[in-house]
Image (cartoon, rainbow over the protein chains, first blue to last red):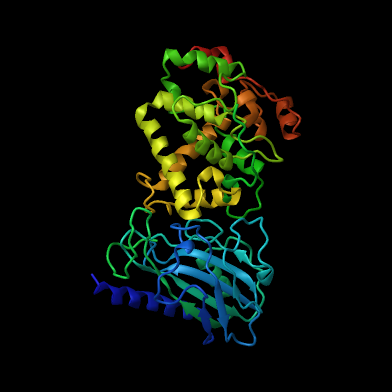
Length: 205
Length: 247
């Protein structure tokens, strides 16, 4: 079962690569971090439907000086038909923002936090304009790819864009990218065990 | 008599529109108007004669069950959870009444009576799972959560995220959500003959003009001018439908 892991990691990395090709320029890379998550490490339960399903905090640094706007996608390259399954899209983020706070409002009528005023949600895989955290099939580990794009212009994009619509809209404006990829395995109430990082089972969301 | 809490911020709006520019009334109009008069639940098409007096009570615009009355098929605790859920699906707000005022709960109870034990069990299992899910993920029973957390929990139930949380949803949590949502809409916008839509409140909410056998040119003009007086009667008050009414 463990032997499958490199295959999925390769698939995920290839998918990252394909996203990086969307700009004609060669975007620089910058650092994406989180005070509560790390690449390859288990996401806290609170960012999933095993918890209150809060959107996770992200920070970034080293963006190109010309950055005018930022967009973020969270996607699971091991789910969806075709992949990826999209968990979160948020864009129109001011270029001077240094990250996203935890628990961004899911109500479209609620204002965004002051530091990301103007940001708006796109539609995730459920057709909802909000963050919806990971809930893969039990006993399987999925990778959740947070992709952050630095844009060289301010795009006044309408709310509710799908992933493809967003990628098309920002094509040619991406001057930098940063990525992180934590993992998640269900932490059900009826299992008093700490989830392992073993890979088995089917892939879902 | 139980007074259920009144809340705002309709879940139905948020989960069924993508652009968030549509008002609740617009949404409900679009979804409910087309089928409002003809919304005959299959579960009641073959209603037993024993149920007819209750249904007749609803026809006369005075539903048999007063708001907040205990339900026949669910415990008080289950009814509390269901009421809170139904209230988030179509809450009362500045635009009008919600599902509770329209007696969607009474409609659901009648539907459960007609559908039988399996349907009742589906509700009991789902409501218990929803309560456990709320406690596990948000630290309190569903009825104790804030409106925002109730909505958040229901979104997870609707999107299937609550499935696999080990709280007892049988099958997908989305199936339970859709079952309750369907019954809530039927109980709010269906023909009052079947219970629910108390005093035609659901039809008023979506400006449904009522069951009409003919629409004159003048009626049409008044309708477009939003001046048409709604027909406040069940289809089964019309002779041609009375003959085919459910027994």
